[in-house]
Amino acid sequence: MDRRGFLRRGAGLVGCSLAAHPFLTTVTLASGPWDARLVVIILRGGMDGLDALRPVGDPAFAAARPGLLGEPGIPLGFYAMHPALAPLKPLWDAGELGFAHAVSTPYRGKRSHFDGQDILEAGTGLDMADEARRDGWLNRLLQTAPGLSSETAFAIGRDEMKVLAGPAPVLNWSPEAALTVTGQSRLLLDELYHADPLFRDAAQEAMDLAELAAPDTVSRRGAALAGMVAQGGRNSVRKLAGFAAERLYNDTRIAAFSLGGWDTHRRQDQGIGQSLGELADAILTLKTGLGPVWGKTTVLAMTEFGRTVRENGTRGTDHGTGGAMLLAGGAVRGGQVLGRWPGLDEADLYERRDLMPTGDVRAYAAWAMRGLFGTETALLERDIFPGLDMGANPGLLR
Image 1 (cartoon, one colour):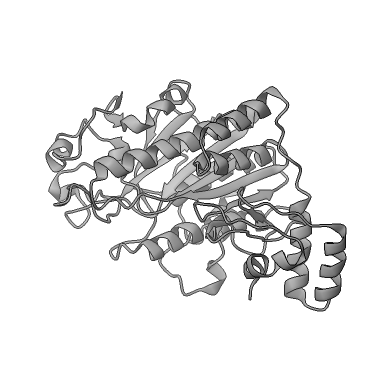
Image 2 (tube, rainbow, N blue to C red; image 1 turned 180 degrees about the horizontal axis):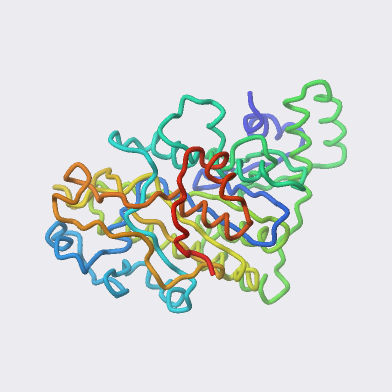
């Protein structure tokens, strides 16, 4: 049994009340010696970047997707943002929202969700056999930083955020978890598990988790955040983003969580709109909850791969290669779409079916960390993203 199993199965015996998050996901947090904030959102299932940010200026786009266009998008020049992202248009206008298009990880060919997500969160190339590279790239960033808090890796819930897995101290918590531990329970845990490192450490983490400060609902910022989360309903992604925002407003510097629902093989016109709406909700909740700290924040939303250029026979799209990532936050130089557009003519496609990648999502993440935290380029290319060539600075931060 691991630590997560201990909390799920055994903690209730000593007064811990646990409830898994309804989306079966966790928010992963880490504090560090920096003032800037970084939020990474993993979009599980393969977001169709060609629908999220439509290249309407490419004449081959409309011909490839006659059944998917639906409602016109929000014009952004050569591109048009999906209408479900309309609530984010003020951020674009304020220079706090941008995109990178035609991007991917080094993953090619097989188009497996599991492999694609592993490579995305590990931040490596295609060699996944090296055990030393199976920790996540955010954890490797933390390993380079002195003065981290004493919290060690911890999770309540069922979804693992591999991007922050590794030896550097992080705290994993689901905002739906209610954890109460009495003084008597503390003594019992100490007595039961003092000779067992696995359960002793897990019990100590449970104690630390129970002592997290309660959310601020009194200040104008805190009240606005609480109201926004409450309006989202019981199973809203606003709970994930709201919990992350509250911690980031205080001592936390890095947060990561995932959103599902992006595997749109059928009736993509229905499914992707809901998922993009939830992503917009998450970003606006972060902005509200971070208040003045939003100006120091960068949000990176990325997915394991894109989807096919042409729609399939069930008005959906299949697993592809190149896609898009979303960049948001007050630290972002928004109002622009980064990356070189490769074109959608058949000869320009990857394997004559997918958007050809012209950029690496790892490079954008690396430049974000270079700008936010001052991490040296050599560390980023050698230790955090082994084998990466960051290339020229794309200018994604202010």
